[in-house]
Amino acid sequence: MNASTIHPVLLCGGSGTRLWPLSRKALPKQFAPLIGNKSLLQLTLERLTGLNRNVTCVTSEDHRFLVREAMDNAEVQGRQILEPVPRNTAAAMAAAALLADPDDLLLFAPSDHHIPDAALFAATVRAGVEAALAGRIVTFGVAPSFPSTAYGYIEAAGATGHGASRVVARFVEKPTAAVAESLILHGGYCWNAGIFLVQARTLVAALRTHAPDILATCERAAAAVSVDGSFLRLDREAFEGCRSESIDYAVLEKHADVAVVRFEGTWSDVGSWNAVALLHPADDAGNRLTGMASALHSRNTFVHAPHRPVVALGTEDLIIVDTPDAVLVAGAGCAEQVAEVVRMLAREGKAVATEHRRVVRPWGAYDSLDTGERFQVKRLTVKPGGKLSLQMHHHRAEHWIVVKGMAKATRGGEVVLVRENESIYLPSGTIHRLENPGKTMLEVIEVQTGGYLGEDDIVRFDDTYGRCAAVEVRGEVELAFPQPAFQSTAALAVGAAA
Image (tube, rainbow, N blue to C red; front, side, top):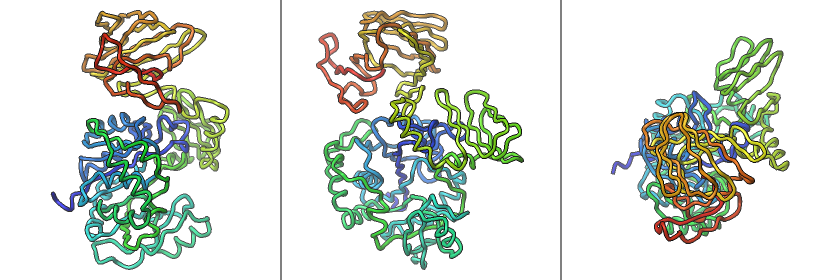
């Protein structure tokens, strides 16, 4: 193995509150289509192909199929380390290092940053290889373009003697405006991008010195890891016992051998709607418009409108974000307070705080188009080869109308091919399944009728994606039951959506 081969590890955590309503807990910002109809995760994966097409992603069980889809779209290979619960970057990086070869040179990178110059990024990372192989933890700092109070800073001292890297003198927490200005004027400081290059053995040794409790719990979780194809599931009981702390606090601020390589290109952590706005060109009045947005007699207004026409008339210093089920209108100076909106909506019990109308599933997605007393209409999109679980509903009947492609429908003991402009009726209590046997996307309109239409009215008998085992849904643990005699190879679970 080439010792200088770089093994990217993407950290795919995050709750997605700062870019609400586009980003939500069920679909954090790294998975949302944000730039050119691509997610930040896909753009990050594409950027990393200049270093290695084999990538490890650390993510949650809930988001594993979103990660897999992004990896497929970016044409990269690799595995996913699944965290049972979020425990911040120290634990995520510890688990990845423990599950790697000790000599592996690991590049840890957030999955939600935007760096348009992939070639410059790859060259900057390679400039840190010599220092990393010499036993240092290498971090990458961004040349600051203004005195930001949203980022931490790194002070660089003299050269390390290993390539372009310099010794880190100290880390500075997110400063006040006055302090940030003084750091810029002083020179020698850069923004902390949260990207690290380090050999697995070096990181493990640093954790053993500075955060032995985190390392110990991650060692137990990694030792009991279960492998499911490309998914590596950390042991839940052990990992839940780990304290939550960032790698900066747990290790970097205490460690002696830290080096920094300066990145001179454009970088954004896309941490607010103002940051998103800056990714788009401005017109002569400072308006930044995306999708189907228009502006008239307006200044310095950002409009995100991917789904329908949105017109800003006579506005100034506004952020307008339109989604199918929620609209945000905010003063540009309030962009950092969007998380407060999410907390308010959550306290009020409104589902839009955390969930989208369109829900992604491993087989595709469903979009709730309309709902009323005793009925609900959904649009299902099923990927080629995708199939919903074999299931049954106690309280609702379903009517499937195929609008594009061809469906393979299981209804009781029969299997029926349903073509475009054809339909099939599924009475309540009928065991059924929808599949896409074709090579193009299948689109189906599903009309549900009945006295109860909740997503928890599902008895699942078999599932291609391994969702029949007991899993946690909405804070409650589903119950796994013995499989009925007519199908002995699968488990049955109650309470999860299709």
